[in-house]
Image 1 (cartoon, helix red, strand yellow):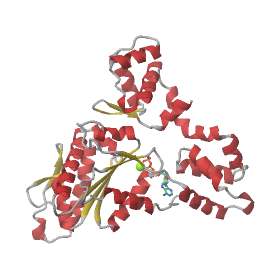
Image 2 (image 1 turned 45 degrees about the horizontal axis):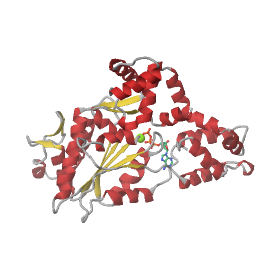
Image 3 (image 1 turned 60 degrees about the horizontal axis):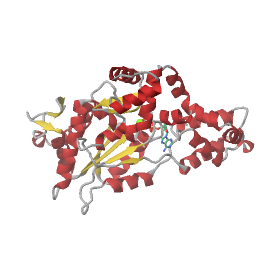
Image 4 (image 1 turned 30 degrees about the vertical axis):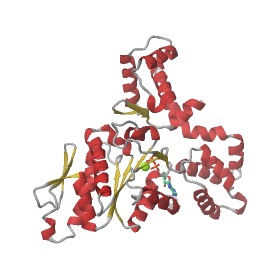
Length: 373
Ligand SMILES: Nc1ncnc2c1ncn2[C@@H]1O[C@H](COP(=O)(O)OP(=O)(O)OP(=O)(O)O)[C@@H](O)[C@H]1O
Ligand SMILES: [Mg+2]
């Protein structure tokens, strides 16, 4: 079951149609896709979007900014671009290779190429243009968990460099084009790219990435029912309801289906569960939030509730916010108190803060739980 996978080719095609630079309308801003945790973003990028981008004639580069949490996001981006240039350089004639830069730099980070021969250093933009020229193909760069780029200087520099490269490559009359796709686990986190005029992609839209739907469930139920006895078949509607209650997370769904189909209740038990015990399913998804929340101090809970209420506009040290916190906490709350609470929430991986005054929930699902519970 671990490699059970249902292709989403239509979705990949729709996304490719949206990111292709338009010859009449001009530059596309780059696409920002947001979807909750564990709902299938990375699988889609790796198994559907990247292969179809290749088929459509692009050179593709994929970077997961969560792959190595200790590495600077700017370095991860530079690494991926340098690695692509390296792999192309190793295939070309030695004379042409002399034009390959020695390294790629961004925001004070320098990545040295294995195939380096020249003495020059290239910017991210120059490296991307060179990848286009060497292959004669458009370049598509996909950055998964892109919000992490906001948390380091080199990361942010890399994003600004990508935007500049996109403008340069897409605004010239000929030459290869650059498309950019960014994903993140919530729109509040991606807001840091598009929110204000100081942000690199100011004005671009964040789009909700579609959750896995009926075709996925049909394939899953079909595959499972083949292995189950005739009198122990799963019903698609029950499974669909369970999936929604579980926040559209395939891993949780598989666990619940296994427990039912293989357990005493049998597949028909699922019908009773979604009808009579919907809350139990919802709670499964929220177990972690409940236990995290239990460890918070009263003030931390108050800070968290205001962050939930105000979303990306949350200004924790503003007079009005401090006043609201004081009311909710039933005592005078000062800016240093709030700073301490925010630091603690960040240490517990409940609040995400890349700096520049941006705060969001680490897992946005917690908001829903807080509002429901
Ligand atoms: N098209 C699909 N068909 C079958 N299973 C899928 C599909 N897409 C995702 N899954 C399953 O869903 C689970 C979560 O997928 P994935 O890791 O891609 O999600 P994610 O949104 O990137 O998660 P995270 O927030 O942890 O980065 C995985 O177990 C994966 O196998
Ligand atoms: Mg992922």
